[in-house]
Image (cartoon, rainbow, N blue to C red; front, side):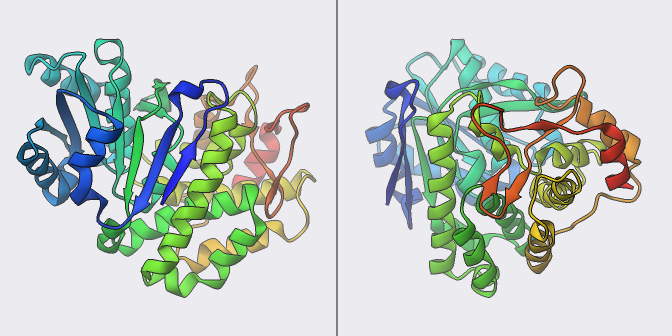
Length: 365
């Protein structure tokens, strides 16, 4: 299946998302068709390199393509400027030129880092996203957000740089641990909340099949989430408007990640953020009563956490939120649901709202 991301502002940068089984085996042909280059820098973390990276490079070489694998240690705490610098220096040492392309093979961290390398190396190289986790397939690989974390916050250094194509091989989902699968489902729940009540109901109804990694159920999740994410980012490439609804759960979620020094993985942090922000939406009167309870029940059904670690003080979380990219004039802003399938806001009023810190502090306490 092929889904198109038709960027409204830059039609020439539009790209396809390929969803299917066995696509990794066809990677050389897919790269030749969608991102032809003289050389390929395949970037993967230390975990994915062993699982898929070495085989991908071997397949490219067997097809007559010049390819080299560049790895870095796995984990969000390695999504740093130092990792970006080390990868770009290795590419310079290997004399990759402007006729090269980057292949990001891995989860969300790899996609962010490798995409940022592609955005900045020699002022920009084409790149391809090959996500290997559910979270990356349905969310982080789509939309061209690339970047790294810094001590002041998550994803504060980066660039919008769209891939040439996204290659989502559904077969790799069968190797995911249950916790990784649940982390991806958190983003699927977000998509249902912000855009599609029927999809949210599907996630409720098919919880058993999804948790058991039933191939047909997972394919339905990937396809619908990709459709939702693609439609939103296609109309608002640089998050000047409605794309900000995709940050539901992320204001608090990113703060949880940062204050826990990334001991809480991204998907779990977003689940915590959605549970808290849904309650916040009801507390400030923008969400229908019962919205938060339904979201919390679904997250809990997938075994996702609902509260920030008790060791993290509310003041530390608030300090992290003040550095959030959505903050304006010192005010913390949130993308909040009005109901399941609909977000509060409009094109005229904006899609995020400021909430007083004392209200947020009371909620966190």
